[in-house]
Structures are given as structure tokens and as C-alpha cells.
Image 1: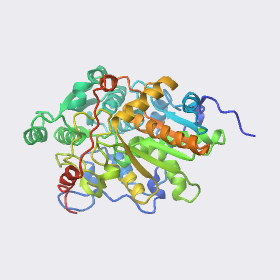
Image 2: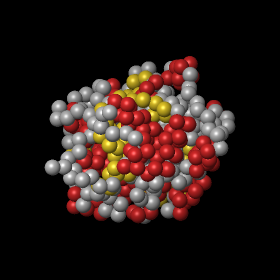
Image 3: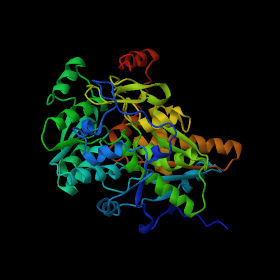
Image 4: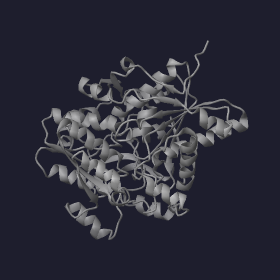
Length: 455
């Protein structure tokens, strides 16, 4: 006899995972290694440790251990906001008139307003453990920078954030939260670094990109003693930390005997999507279950659906290692009117390999449709969603309406990565009818992709 499903499914504190899950251990085709751009050879631990924390490098290179213990100091911090709830969207279901059951894993119940804190606290912990003075990073919409500034304040570390210029200008309050937690915030590309000056010269008046900000943050880290660079998405270590999202989601579903049919996540660099889907993808890879896993990306930055699977630089300034991923080219810069986050030119090597192996599929949506779905969700479920998350909401609604047509009662699960209270400029543009969609042409993408290194 099945249990009655509450609005919010909570795990007990003692049910919170004690280990992260490393999906690479179950992947038959492992993600391709990071390459040294100078030699074309796989990056060694020693080379990576010049940029990243030593323990994080070990996690980045670990393709064999399925489970990695979460240090007690990190679990203690997690307990301030985890386990996070899995919510049954009863009100949205009613508004749609669908027989589908819709669930969302809500990651916005912490001050940073997003899932990013799950990895930020881990990376800050390992930096402190190594005896570092501080860390540098990039941020796009500002969620990662906010999370990292909180984590660094907790461990007493310096935090230098290079924020994509268009977001820096559009989201002053997100910037001020970072500064409140002690971080220094610089609009990118800036004139503080040599790579920033070069990008400004090559692209006068540019509004920036994550690739630009990454380049600046890496240069800042390697040029100062006692600093390392940390990244909020894309890297395998980040997806490892974010696997706590998927582990909790699966545990909550199992608690009530619910089998997910579809799992939907927004896809920018891959941190939220990868964290949400990893345990479910692992079951597929081990032949234990089957799920329809769907990545949703913006039509203005469609790396999975329109990019190429090849080695590319992780940053615009071409100072980072090469990663094999679905990419639009490291020189690709989204249009200035792109308001929904998810603006990275490439995709996590793990997510890219899972997509290439057809373990997951992908689709893209326009931002006006995304904000329409966001407002429908806000009016029914009472949460103002982050624009990034709203990409997943849009497709979850679409799939629920398909169930309405077919009469099929699917269990649809999506990731609500955070809240949108610092994204009101974008909401204002949508409400005022000033938001426009931009879809790059095949020629634009071909020009950018053609600049990728020939490996």
C-alpha cells in the first residue's frame, strides 16, 4: 500500500548522504582527459596543482571510486540547509489539468539562493585545509560568486570574483551580497589582468562571457602566492560535490515508493544537471533501471544541441587546459540581451560523454518561453524561480501537457536550482514586453567553432 505523498518530502538529518557519488566509476566510456594546451598531452596532477587545490585535483582525476566520503566539516555545514526538500507541485498540476505527477528538488533554501553552495563549501574547505590564503573565481549570473563568498567567509579565506560584465551591471544587489560576505568583485573583462586587457582590445565594448571571466580568474590565481582558482561548474570535481542533489532526490523518491519516469535539468556548464542526474544515470549505466533524462539549454547558447564534440579551451583567453566537450567555441559570447543565465560556451565533459553515449538527451528553448513558464510557476507554486531553473520548468510543463493529451500519468522530476530575486531586471524586461529572443545563425556558430584547436 503506497503512502500518501505530502507536498514536501523531507529526509531526516541522519538520512543525508555521507558520501558523494562519482558517476565516472560506472561509465564504460570515461570522459576524455584534460589536455595541456602546450604539449597536447593529458594534464598531470602536478600541472593541475599549480592552478587548483591538491585534494580537488585528486577528485578531478578520479575515474574509479564510485563513492567518496564527505568530510565531517562539510557535512556539518550542509546541515544548515540540507537535506533540501523534494516538493510535489500539486498546484501546478491542477493548473495544467495534467495526470502527470510533477516533483521538483528545491535548492534555493540557503542565503546564496542556489545549489552552488554545495560545491563552494567543499572547495573552500579543501583550500583552507591546504593552508591557502585565498581563492579566485568567475561568476556569470552571480549565484556561484555569492555561494563562494559565503563559503570563504566561513573558513576565513580571501575571495576574488570576476563577474561577467553584463551581469555585474544588471545585478548590483547580487554583487553587494558578495561584498557583504567579504569578496572583492570585478566586472569582466577588466583592465586588471593582461588577458582582460587583451580581450577588451580584441572585442571593444564587449559585455563579457564566462570564458572571459575564467581567464582572468586563472591569471589572478597563478600570479599570487597562496591562491588557487576554483570553478563553480563544468569540472568533474564540481559535479561530484553536486551529486548530493541527486542522491537526496533518489532517497526521497524511494522513501515513498516513487519511480521517476523523466528527470529534467537546466544545462549551462553542467553542475546542477550533472548533480541531479548522476545517481539515476548510474542506474542506467549499471543496467538497473531506465529513465528519460533531459537537459534543457538556452537557444542563445546551445552547446549540446548545436555545438560540436571536440577538444576546446575552457576559457576565452586560452590559458586553461583543453577539455573534450560539446562546445560552441571558446570565443563565443552570448548576445547582450541573453538574460536567463546558462551562458557558458561548453558543457561538462561528464555530461558531454553521457549525451554522446545517448544516456541523456537535450533540447533548447527561447528565453521568452522560459520567462512565461517562470511566471506561471511563480503564480501557482509560490516560488519566484531563477531564470536558469526556469528552463527546466518550461520543459516540465510541456511534458506534463503532453501527458494531458495522452492521459499518461508520468512522474516528472526537475531541478529547481534556486530563486530569482536578484534577476528582476530580466523579469522586468519580460513584463514590459522588451525581452527579445536571439538564436545564433549556423554561420555564427561555425565561425566560432572553427577557431577551436585542431586536436
